[in-house]
Image (tube, rainbow, N blue to C red):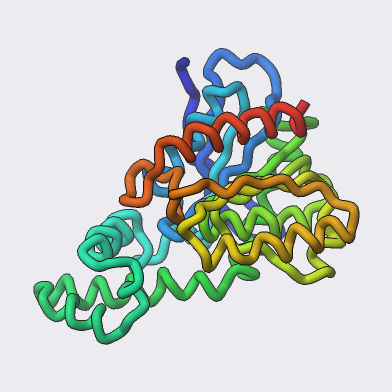
Amino acid sequence: MSLKTEWITFSQNGKTHRLYAARPERAKAPLPVVLVIQELWGTDAHILDLTDRFAKAGYLAVAPDLYAVEGKRPESLTEERIEQIKAFLDTLAPPYWHDPVAREAALEKQPEELREILRATFTDLFAYLNKLPELLEGLKAVPGFLADYEWSKGEKVASIGFCMGGALSIMLAASEPKLAGAVNYYGRMPVTQEQVEAIQCPIQGFFGELDPKITSLVPAFEEAMKQASKTFTYKVYEGAHHGFLNDTRGGYHADASRDSWKETINFFHKVLQ
């Protein structure tokens, strides 16, 4: 299928935002929207590929660049710099990513100029794990843009996020009452009753059995949703690690990816009709 793809900058509430948009090239009218929310790595090749895949399923798919400030990435968070930090971290086992001693030992083996670049990017990038409310504010601008955009005007919007973006997908559902549905792939689940009470749409989740820090939070969220009479369905895949859908990383799991993709498309077909 031929797609029309483009990067769009738009202003909302006095701020400039940037997003990637893809749609079937031969579409003649506005389309329901899948809002794709990035992993920690930003709108990288994997996220853009997923966005294109949703467009090929017949949707307008958009992926906001949450690291863009007034429409442009800061120097430490450019695509090139993030690819450098990914390559460096791939030389370490994930448990050592947040071990300062092990990380510094590995950094000391890098050329001096690259070492300082990696330090700066690591610090700025991973700081966002503790800045989800800040990222949510940028994300909340997207539904307003879509309401007036020629290829989505009058159509429903549902969100899907991965890792950090999975948590943001649920946070968006708790702050955007018009959202038609939200999907979380291996992101943390909010467990406050206030957040759960604010959710107005169906929620779907996909998690890996071998990702206990994330998966262990799911039962509490399930119970909170049940108590609030909200809709939440999920699957935990045996033998799957965190990030199992990301076929550019070591945790890719083909069986879990195949099944969860089928379930995700079915979910969007239901909530975006």
